[in-house]
Length: 232
Image (cartoon, rainbow, N blue to C red; front, side):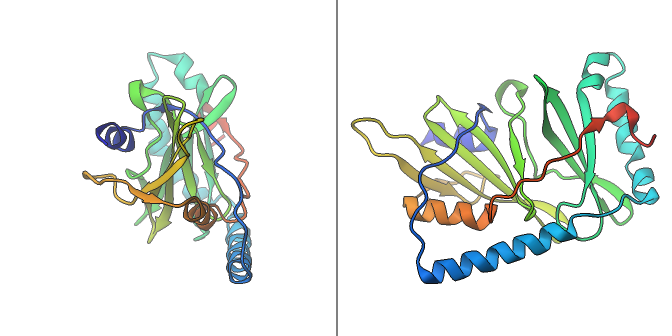
């Protein structure tokens, strides 16, 4: 339990996993899934927002601060990318910072505009043990999932969504692989900012929650650009 709690707070180290099988869906489940997918598609259509000159200016200070931090390490600056994308479909683009690792850009920080000022979203964490960067997935329905793995056996899926203009942690789903003697187990944690034990759940509930947060699974393909070229 202690090890699990430490993992849920610290986001251990880089890892990725696809979870389990797909459970059968009842008629009522099908109706709910269809409704969810319709909502996802509507949200996705709202995400296509033209970048406004005001947004470029509002995020300029953020970019300047990041670049100054890299003055003594040009290699870091070369690996840092950005994109402007409206995650929650409210008509305002968020500033997404990414880091190139072995040719793949990982999302590391998110800023949004609040009261005309660029604000870092503290709830979002993609840094694991030893400063490693954790892989994340941005879904078109506005959900962000951050993945990490413990000892190659236990997989953690952290879900985030915007609520009233702020990115909020939603839930943590945990999947532990079984072996020839033990069955796979599933659990969740709803609070990670204070000691909170995990709650065992069934595989069906695990799959239902994944569907609830990930919708139809459509992923946003971000158009990463070198941070040094911001505003050009």
